Image (cartoon, rainbow, N blue to C red):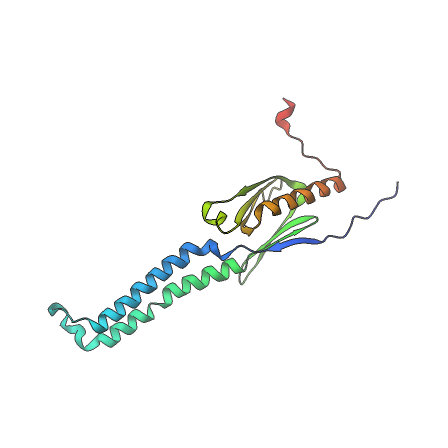
Length: 183
């Protein structure tokens, strides 16, 4: 019996999480920034209470310090943006590849024939935007679960993954055996 060569591996989908994952970080940072700006304006414009006479000559310096503190929420926003932007998901005809990391990267490869289950999680905030999370459960020892967070069209992606999982299992002639059914 002659061995047939498998078809070459092709990328069928690739993407990254939506920045909506950072919504809380962005909102809190915006709130803190507005508070700092309001405090800087207040220090410049408002009359100084009698107990704070030492601030009278330093209004400009105090306002500058408050404005310099804007770097703190800006740092958190930039960090959240870069970390989320550096996550890459790729679905091929053979595996799921997840690459994370900014300076140093980590790449997880998950063979499709090892996938046991795919759960679509669509919290209200993501569902409003047409996004969802895919929780992939596998028989892989190093990566038993893989979360594809905030991906667009999560239902369609799950269906596409199912199709390629079955095709991969057929090519490799593997099947999932549920041991609980044997008892």
